[in-house]
Structure formats: C-alpha cells, structure tokens
Length: 346
Ligand SMILES: NC(=O)c1ccc[n+]([C@@H]2O[C@H](COP(=O)([O-])OP(=O)(O)OC[C@H]3O[C@@H](n4cnc5c(N)ncnc54)[C@H](O)[C@@H]3O)[C@@H](O)[C@H]2O)c1
Figure 1: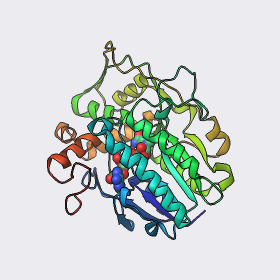
Figure 2: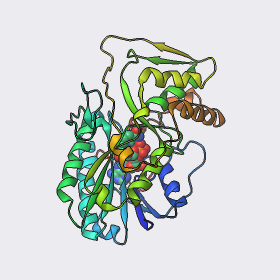
Figure 3: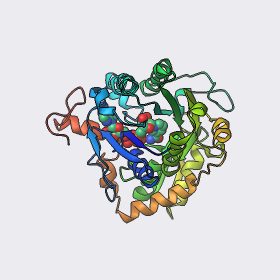
Figure 4: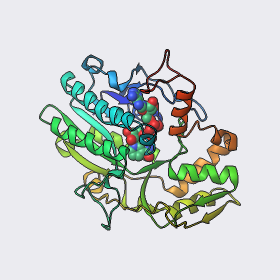
C-alpha cells in the first residue's frame, strides 16, 4: 500500500522514528500530537511533517477525511502515569482512542493500526503467552490497552479494520529519547554513574524490540492485505527477543567499558515475568527480519549518549522520563489538571 497515513503521537519516542521511516517508504505522512514532549529532544530534531496540533480528546471526523490509514500511537505511555492521575490514562488512552476510531470509521478510514502492548498479559505462569492467552492487566495503563482493544473489536466490520499490535518493551535511539524503559535506562545509568543496579534477581523475562525494527513492522500492517490482519491481535516481535532482565543489564554494562552490574535481589522487588510467543507474527510475515538485539542496541545508545554528552544532570532533569516531564509541565502551570495546555502549546 502507499497512500496517506495519519500517525498520532508522532512527536513521541516511537513516532519520531516511525514518521521518517514511513516517509522514506514513500507514504504521505501527517502527524497528530499535542506536543507534551516537543521540548524533550536528544540530538537533532527529526524532519518535520505536516501536523495537526490537537489533543486526541478533541479529534473530529473532519480531521480524518482523506486518510487511507491511521497508526495510533498517541497515549500516555508509561505504567506509573496512571499513578499520577488514574483519570488521564482512562481518558486519553481509552476514551480518546475510541473517539478517534469512531471518527475514523465515520470519515471512511478503513485501516486502523493500534499500538497496543504485551503488558496486558500481566503475570503469567504459561511458558509463552500467545495472542489467545487470557489478559490479566495489572495497571491502569495495561487496562486501558485491554479496554481499547475490546472497544475497537466492537467497531470492526466490512468498513473498518482495526489491528492490535502488541509490542514488548521498546529500546533504542530516538530523537525524542525515553530513559524510563529498561535497556535505555540501564545504558544511561551505566554511562553516567559507572554501574547498573538491579533490584530484582534479574531472572524475570521481558519481550523487547528495537525502535527501528518496530518502525519497520508498522509498514507490514500498512501494506498487508486487509483480510490477513482484519480485527486481529499480533504479538509484535520475535521469540529470540525475549530476554531476562539480567541479560539486558549485562548488555548495558558491556557497552560501557568499566561499568559494573549489581544484582541486589531485594525481597519484594518486581519479579513479574512473562515471555511472549511471536509465532503468529513469524507465520504472517515470514520474510521480516529483526535487525537489532539488546547487545547492538546498547552499543548504539552508549555511542549516541556519549556524543551528545548525556550526563547525570540531563538524566536528573526528568526531560526523558515521561512521568517527571508531565509533572514538571503541571508544576510550571503550563498544563492544567486535565493535562490540557493553558495557552499556547509548550
Ligand atoms: N515505548 C514502549 O516501550 C511501548 C511498548 C508498548 C506499547 N507502546 C505504545 O506505543 C505508543 C507510543 O509510545 P511511545 O513510547 O512513543 O510514547 P511517548 O510518550 O514517547 O509518545 C506518545 C505521544 O503521544 C502524544 N500524546 C499523548 N497524549 C495525547 C493527547 N491527549 N493528544 C494528542 N497527543 C497525545 C504525546 O505528546 C507523545 O508525543 C503508545 O500507545 C504506547 O502505549 C509503547
């Protein structure tokens, strides 16, 4: 498929990599974002695309006329954001997503690619969780993904084809870097302090995926025949990218000469574990190759962090931690209690 694609949340961590990837693939890309993290740049700003500067909670069908597809990334993307205010996660991640989907359907946009999460499986005793595994969301964020998938399923019909792209934890370099996800945080810690401290025993498993590989997978869902993806969930990744937290920490310290890994194995530490099965993805997209691993991603991050001079002050500024930055915007009076801008964005 080629055509006109709306990427919501295009000014976020994944969006800032996905948008140029789609432009290179000759899609006509428009972004939609309210710009919470527009000031949170690491390195150079990505090339600009035409943008609808709007809150997802205010999107109308008229905004969406003429698009062939929507890739919906826009969300509060961090588990603990729900702790700051439970209502925001439900309003933005769930209600605004349903509003967007209904408006898309009304505007005749058939292909709707929802950036969901494997986190919705929660704790699992199963060896590998596939798309049929029971959902067991443990947080407001995870619940918002479950609720949205369920609501989108009800909208699916001959005129509207949602697809649920369940991602593992994303790592790697983006112009709108995040340091609140596992490998990214470990590399920043290794580089700025000389050590990585793990509270758990490092044994829990997590599926992880590099942001560049992830960006290329969205191209698959944009071009796949609709009948192969219509109203379907996909664990989006590869079996060999299920990693133990300990191995992710080891990749981080290996990329920073002299850095040490300390495994505290504290009682009561987060020991949640699960491995995702990516068999359905591999069967549906047999030619797709994941090019990155946490080991190569750690080297990429360490090189880039050195180049821009990332230091303890930049890490402590909270600019690259979603929750801290939103709190900063509220404390500064720039966002109101509903997470809406007071006056001009930013
Ligand atoms: N990063 C991960 O590890 C990961 C893993 C699984 C799923 N996901 C999902 O992928 C998507 C993108 O994640 P990310 O890491 O790029 O997050 P991010 O926080 O970096 O980006 C999200 C973007 O959405 C925008 N946004 C938030 N609320 C909005 C609103 N009300 N109106 C308009 N724009 C709004 C923000 O300004 C931001 O630019 C999210 O849906 C997230 O849940 C991310």
